[in-house]
Amino acid sequence: MNGIQYLYEALESLASNKLRSALTVLGIVIGVAAVIAMLAIGRGAEMAINDQINQIGTNLIFVAAGGQDIRNPRPLTLGDAQALADPAQAPSIRYVAPVIQSRGAVSYRGESVTTSILAVTSDYTSVRNSSVAEGQGITAQHIRQRSAVVVLGSDVALSLFGRTDNLTGETVRVQNQVFRVIGV
Image 1: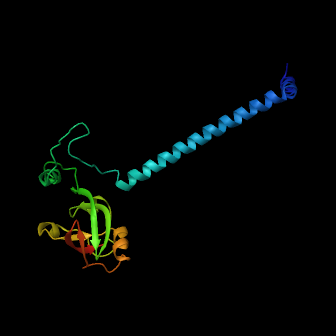
Image 2: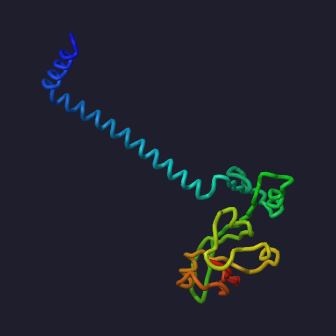
Image 3: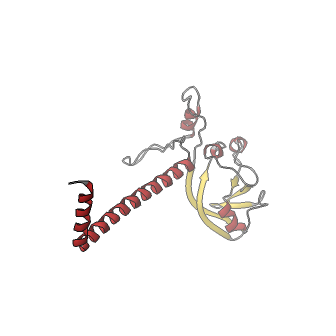
């Protein structure tokens, strides 16, 4: 048999079993579509994960006290952060930015909003690759002098003041303690 005869027999078989042929073709189309869809979903998930990693930084390490199995972990101290920042002890570390995070109320003239509250050091903006749109960030001098200053997030500023500009110098209460706004 030559190639033409094979082709003729195949077409004849397809014509005589139309329903079976149609179902076979439909199965192949659905299978190919499913594989393409799964690949697209996988690539989309990969891109989303990569975007999240790039947002926090691929060269960041977050250190937390204890672990999931430890009931009462010894808290990390500012001394621990200073030891990590010491070039003699950890030469590969460029910045160390200790953070204490909680949730609480920030208020201004009767308006109040519950939000995340971060206590940070001056290296925080460098580590997180963030910037202050207006005013300034927390500096080493603020830390040394234990200044009661705050940098407001734009959402909190909008909720309390209805704006995000010209807020430097205003005072707000964070957990009922008065802080001067130095940046937004």
